[in-house]
Length: 437
Ligand code: GDP
Ligand code: GDP
Image 1 (cartoon, rainbow, N blue to C red):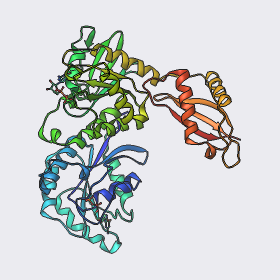
Image 2: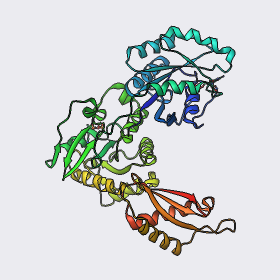
Image 3: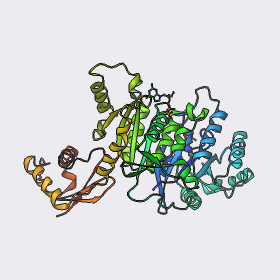
Image 4: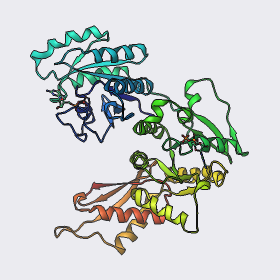
């Protein structure tokens, strides 16, 4: 299920980041009393009235360094218009409508996207009449908000949720493996896809005439149906797309959301970048199966240790996902590209693997016998039994007498034991502790 995207736009210092944190329910982004602060967190999941959505603070996106404020805002707005399902346009209720606000409003009016106006910093009821000034921007009812105090945000979210698109039917059947090919610009994503599609045993399915299908490429290979999601997005080229690293994180987010397996493409020539970690982290947190594909291997000067060195580098940078297999390929020469789909299939199977309760408990028993959980504060932890409650990713509940006494490292130990017994290659697994007397 692909979640809709809500983007926050507006000029600096109106309170976008504060509003973002308020909605995300986390106080992660750093808010300082000066404009142009750096933010770490620009996307999050929001939830209101039973509707989940991605939330993106476009104010935290970085563009070209020489960007003037106005260009910066124009870029934000363009991206929001292109990517978001609903746009929250934030204004400073205390400073009134500025020329920049009018400019943004013009841009947003030209696009055919629902816009909700958040007139922020109206901390007291007595300020609420300031809101009338904002009608001149020509959008539907502006909402008075104080992101600082959290007032009005409920009304705002009501309006946002009302404008989210209808929930989409799942477009592909259960057995189809949805794959996204993710990576920084220029790592060779589209070259890889073209290679895969060009292989003789791959049949590209006929495309029905809907917009959704136009961005996805359904294929059949070795008797298995796949769909490569967001193929169009990968091919997209433009100044804005190229100039912002963080933007491709935003793009990746949607593709990851809509896929079972994430093929994380790294550049063998250039090595691993900060952004790679960010994107891989999203895939991990989202519980998707992952494999690493190191591309441009033809262009790397190699000796007999180059590959193991690169493996080690991946292990170091992505230590939290050492379950993910690694493939060294060249889209240019075609080397090992034919191994990608079979590996995708393998990790997809691990991702939806179901272990029976009896087998699971046999492994649990052996694990707790050979290394019992250490006692904490003189108390003995007892892990009573385990049961798998979900797939994609495999999720296992561990019932124990006191979850608070189970140390993180012991959970890690159990995870390793389960992996040893069941493989789970390429998939994260979730272990959850529950109390049972
Ligand atoms: P951004 O640049 O649009 O992301 O704005 P920030 O979220 O960084 O906020 C800019 C300044 O406005 C900070 O000092 C915030 O504390 C302040 N601010 C944000 N929301 C409110 C609000 O609802 N009321 C008041 N009084 N100040 C706010
Ligand atoms: P994308 O932005 O990730 O989709 O990357 P592209 O597929 O557009 O490739 C970016 C550039 O890298 C192009 O000039 C490709 O020809 C080049 N490229 C892609 N794959 C390889 C490869 O395996 N080896 C070499 N040497 N160059 C490659």
